[in-house]
Length: 310
Image (cartoon, rainbow, N blue to C red; front, top):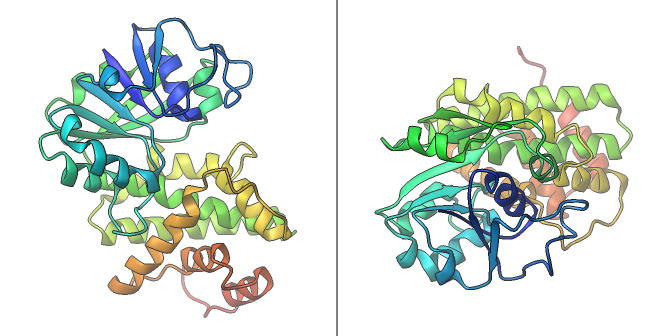
């Protein structure tokens, strides 16, 4: 039995996809009424997905933590004891703003006896729920990674395995920051060429930061880094891109929508300052998200940086 903790769009989509292989439990504090959910229009949750708001009923050997990055630490503080010793698969793409920890780091602190993995890569919940072909990275350094890979794969959900947990998680977190920057470029009317430049230079930042944090550079060139960046920085389905576009256009953005990249940019900037890692795009996104800089001034500052070799 597999359980998914978190009934947001992505958690629900994974539960729907995995239920094709057998029963799945979906836990959430706010569950959809009936078998339809406004988070995934047109998708019906199969009867093979058991819905519950009682966490005790969702305890299984393998549990997917489909929770927002900034909510994970509090959830683990409350429930870490009962989760310990399980196979815990994180899907959050971010860095904790308070501690600067990755999701796997938070899980390891709260559940030292758990097998920890991260499921990440280029994917939208709607695509997964509709059964469209999707390829993801399953990052896990444990000996049981291969069995977990097979358990979570379906005919249309293809998982590639890596033991570089740090690299996979950083790729997923950092690409949200660059996607916001790409959205700012489009929202501000700077054009597609500017977006392409931000994606390219942003990927260089992602790689530089990840390498400094002990990740393997080749991991960033895979699904969990470059693949996810391309999707998130170019699609209207991306919440981070839409948020950036609203920033660039000077428009309001729905505050109820989770935008992981805004908090991650601030966390990354703080870490980068401490470690003397150059992250101009992440710094700019963090300043914009906090209202400490204007779009016009940010554009000028980035364009006036000293010329250098690529």
